[in-house]
Length: 520
Image (cartoon, rainbow, N blue to C red; front, side, top):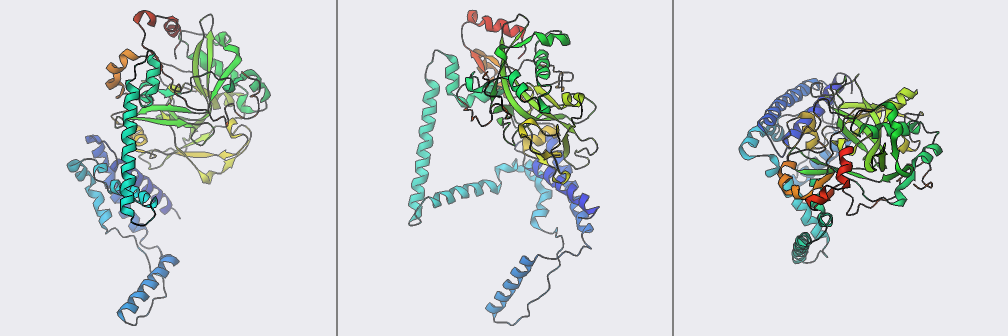
């Protein structure tokens, strides 16, 4: 489209997405309704401006629409017995705002105040139920289908009742081990843990990381892998440290354990527990973190996850303790074309260049899982093209090119909208000023991995209002990142929650002593 019409249409699409996300919120406040009212006014102004801008454009119906209109006119004339001349010229089209749907947009705020959120009376509910009936129809032999559909529904209801009874019996089985009883109820785990990750030290997941780095030393991404890893682990140990103290950080047996996936648990804006899955070997590998309070006013940082690992770490003479961490490639915020509500444009990020050692150390790094707010949804900027220059692509891409720029979708779901907009009741600012994530230095608080099961019931209501997010063998030394295509099974021990229901005397064990010396 020619300018300025192209910019006008893009801003209109942004405004439409903003209005649609607000209109479909499942929990409204007076503030959100006021914002919906304001954006409705802006949407109407932009639509009327677009009508004026396109009034002089020569826009005609498509050939398919033209052919359909001709056939309808011919059929109508044949039925009435009249002889009419079929038009052979395509009809000129204009933007029509005099429609019931467009007129109803202005009444959304008043309707929500009267009857509640739109999900209570939306036609989407009945349409989804209609699809269920269609699926039942497809399972019949199409002859006398109604009794068969009723039987299919009865079987489904019976199976759901049986499953409910089994879940109830399973949860009521007494167990001497409180951890086992928690693992039986998998639905309760996301409410207790900030994230879920595999807990076993399987030999097939282990690899000798110095040897792995040496065998892949030609890759730019691994040039500072070990120094950055030691610096990250040291930053998570309480106390004042010197840069030389990284030599005191010891990873037992030089082994890292890789994981195929990581589940990030968080509380949504409407106070519901949700979960995002991070998989470094799939497109679902971008994460959102709180901003570091730098020069940018943007509230978040973005990174591509290259690997998910854990290791048994010792510092100085302290006992060893497991630490979970993610290897990431940072994405820089495009300050030249900033996004936001005022400019009606999505935020854009890009991979920083890696032309020297300083840029390499800033391009890659490590983060703690509990610092992740949510997974991020990035849309490639196809117009910017791709790059395959050394150092621009990440290690996990295995030499494949990547897009130069990505747009950050703040409208991917309603919860993501409220994180950018603010005011979500279920959101909790876990990182007050001065305690946010930086690329190289971390101020870590207790990630809540170890819980006392006796306190769970008393803290359940409180936890529901907090957003915890806001998710070796020498043979594994090839160019492929460890853990690739391993198909790690997320068993009953996959949630990173260490629950202890023993006596008060046993609670003061060596594990508690170790926890006082480490910050995990």
